[in-house]
Image (cartoon, rainbow, N blue to C red; front, top):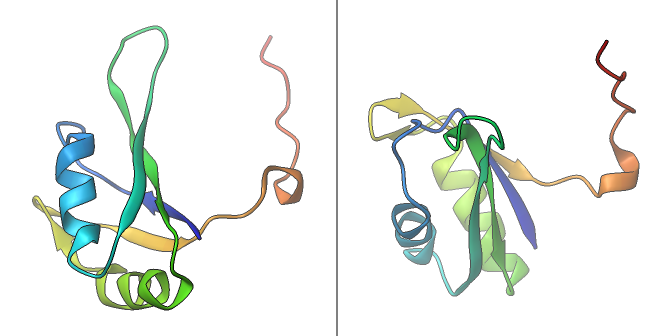
Length: 90
């Protein structure tokens, strides 16, 4: 299951993200989304877990919980096709 993790502190590393979710099961990947211009984290990322039951347990336990000073948002990621279209920038 692909899990969206939002409201992350900008200084969190992918290893710290992986470690937080690995308490609930095997983490396949942990990825932070990085701004191309600044090279800084955008404050959200994705965690992939192979076992849906473990992923559900992680979502329930970590959603709205404090993580490095911020309450994070954790939920099942929506497939790319299900998201609204972004308007082009001028």
